Length: 365
Image (cartoon, rainbow, N blue to C red; front, side, top):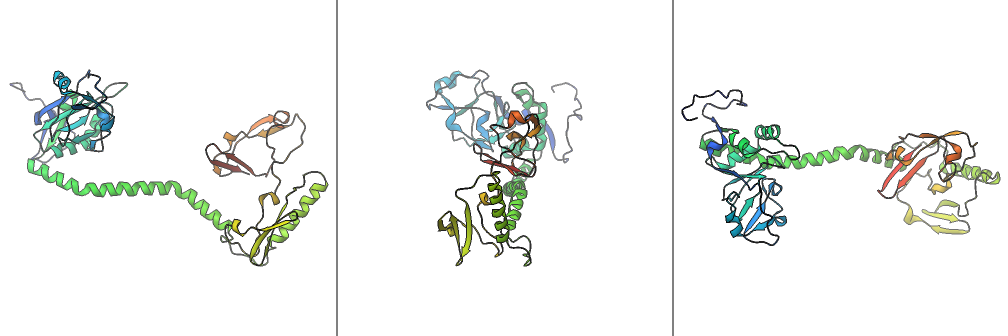
């Protein structure tokens, strides 16, 4: 600089460039490189002459959420000499907070910025410089060299001294043109990748549900004609429940359900009443299968009798994992502390917990 001897910056140069290119400090290719007011006025809620924007208003290569900003009058704006003003073609670069975002200003607004945004007027092809800012090289540099504790910043002096690779002007134009060919493809790929990620995340659960659905429809394994039909099994279950009722071990269900098939329809007998339930039948099942109410084949919330000092497993709901996955843990407690106020179960019972507040269902065996 000036009459000083040249200093080697080989340790700063991050990669090789073509012989017709040059490395330069950003400030040497800008006619304006400023940031916003460090102590901006509060501004006004009602719209006046100038929009007061910050780094949060720059995202996805454009200005966003401008309806949420405050405003400055022209009088206040011109009193604040340190505040940035912008012209069409200028580049906005976020220097504090949301680091490294940028966009090219189209000149359609009267706008000024707080310190979190730097404004650049460049002698390079502005779209080329904007893509330099977006490159992995520059984004990594910003993240690595940003300073601060509560809020990181890549401040004006750091931006001004940053090295930029400069090709011949016409090559800058060609580079931008080539980049624009690929950007729609990248956007399309991003959309498809997001869909693929969602599919991959949901696929195991969906596959499991599909397999279970085939299973309960009788389509997962071939039907074996020699198997005992389900109607015989249900008769045995009813007989066993009747025995337990007589022994006083379970109570009789006053509305015991028996479902029968007749004339290609399904009918349910509840005591002396019978009604057609075809509108409740969700799908067809094999001829040897039967539909039944859950209460017909199990005892809900059974009660156990044990000595008070017996150590038993106790399962608070957080120890039963979400989903139908049979994964759970348990605590050990004395029977006398849990026999009242809690659901009883024993080995091989099926436990289902319904969390109505967040619509999750859990189960285990």
